[in-house]
Length: 77
Image 1 (cartoon, rainbow, N blue to C red):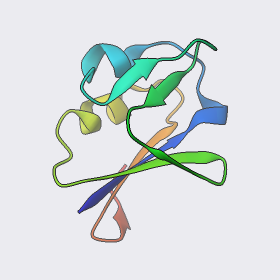
Image 2: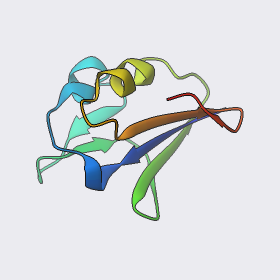
Image 3: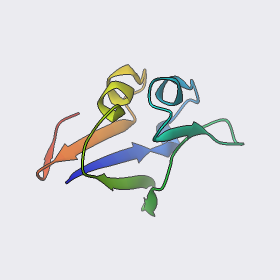
Image 4: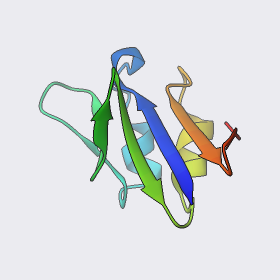
């Protein structure tokens, strides 16, 4: 399984992740993005997924690189 990690404090609220991957991302009332179904782990949000799907597109499009993907215990993005 892969893990999607969102450093929400670093998020600037540009909305790119929600635009390219609305299945997993939405904009919250505070203007920052939220990883749908994620658990809070420290300052991050984390979600384990079977398939990375559009999350890779979201991570690559993020202008502040606050979305990370780990697969097999290794950070991909």
